[in-house]
Length: 257
Image (tube, one colour):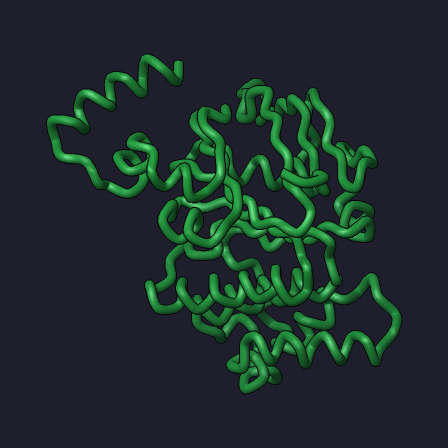
């Protein structure tokens, strides 16, 4: 990997007495798309919340452009160049689509540049232009996901954190959204860290991947290489027969303890 834009070093995050993240370290190279895979409850969302400042780690360090950011306020981290599109398509439901986009640019002052970027968002997601005066709470699930990503983009981030962008969407919409994610990465040079349960779409649209189990990283590598690993095929892509599946399940438990 090239020079890391984001570095995470041995972070531990707790919910009360429960350790959710267990000494995780990883890097995200500038200009890349990196994915963290894991089943529900593995700790993926907690990692993004810890990085973006929503939760403070008890131990470890997080570096953005070589500057420590752990335990800084989310607003400060946003101003340093990191935006976060959270899980669950969290939009301001009573505000219009346009107002949601403007809220995403609240750290900026140049109205001309803000309008230019709103127009860029409309180019990526034309349906948002059609719905610009509609309350965001009345959008479909897919449209709200588009708006959530677009609002995160409006701060002109160096790196954007995406939490389960495919969750609950049809295969057609998932394909469309990931095509736009690729465009954002290539055209705007925005580095992207995404967490996903959909291993196939994530690994086919990223450069590097990490596999998370029970708060620990248990596997990492180039995305194309991970797609060919038997454990990934079995547990995330469902491409093993039952006999092999049982044998590898035993090996996985033994190896990942």
